[in-house]
Length: 425
Image (tube, rainbow, N blue to C red; front, side, top):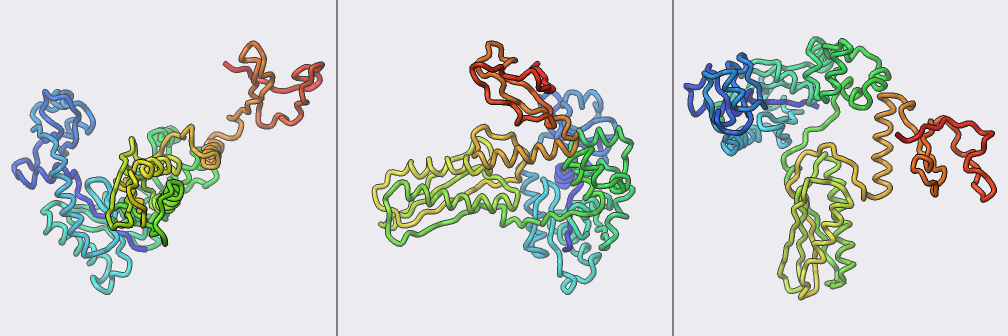
């Protein structure tokens, strides 16, 4: 596989400089006027040298750099420019995956016959984007997404850095671990352990990294070695996902329609899980035997790909139709797809799904801290007056099957058996 990554450094600033060239090489802060309530959206290198950072308040930015030029945030303008960039990339590959609002991945395997070696291909991509957008472009080409992105970040404007197959680890060796997409907690622990470069992290045994950092550490260790198996997801996979079903004979039973709609939603969710997407809107369309169609939709409170949540939304939609006629066909659509993120476990998810997520969380914590950090809750006496006497916390190695069945003439715990009991605090 060959992947190209192209991006525009300081994208919002580049768009503003394209419209007003006098802003170049000046201290510029994008986010609003200094007296307005808000945070810094983008900052020029000149203002960054003075100490202005993205995310700080506008008033604080003015105190640090009073000579800076403050501009309002124009996200619609930036999104329009980003679409220009994506359209310029379409002739090179059908698989284009946007990354944020400044870059994109391209699947470029097998294009040597059309464009020649990777350097010539990269030069063609850069020239096409620059001609279409008049923005400074950087690019990188490698065997996987992570290495291609780092090659672009470490390159220079209007050039493409190519990493040959087998050279990924050597290229990443001296680069800082801060370039890895890890959590702040892991970055802090890497700093405390004196691990500064990707080469240092890659040289550690996988078992040691897993024990110290858990699954996140194992993933970071693979990236530091130049190994990334994630695929480039084309933009067409990010559009609405929909499936339909046509009945042999028109139906009018609510249960049949709800069952069919839920089956379609399960298959759509399988696709979303594969692409790592969540949806923000669920739609159901009915086609009646008269030929007329009717659509209803629900906007979710937050994007989700949970089977229970989507299933309940589909049931509500199917039940909300008037059903003046019998139904000939049914279609379910999942729209407003975005990249999935971590989420808190649901209290009301299905038992199997909930147990699977709990097992994954336990495995992650055990790999990071060891099994000794877990205690097992054991019921002692449900009718005890004090709550702390109803349960006990036991070490996992403590025997839990030797508790005898409590009878009226026996104590809850036999005095001859010793247990390591930890009271609730």
